[in-house]
Image (cartoon, rainbow, N blue to C red):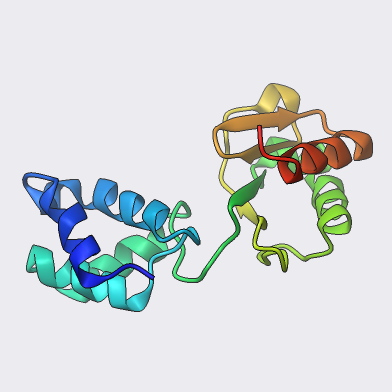
Length: 157
């Protein structure tokens, strides 16, 4: 949990804070250690920027890169665009769910992985695709999914 002082320190690093609100929220989400923005944090950011808290919540709930609940260290995003859907993205979802022992939208007990849908990630040529951090994986098989999860469990990529 971030302290109010830590939140203020991040906000104050950005000139024209309201113009940089997405960057501020991303930095705070990263600093939270659990990939999310708490209610207290959102309220403090609003206070520091002198804007309504509802504006912060609008951003947090609109953009899929943000979360208002704790998530895993690694966010596994499964593309839900039409090309991935046509190329059986549901099978990829099942592979990740089986390998991780969680359902879509959940976080593993060890807080390492969160599984969620995302919009198009621009990897239609290798659909169905998944993304972890900035790395995109495509043409996935059951063996690929097992290997990917094992590598992240052993220290990430």
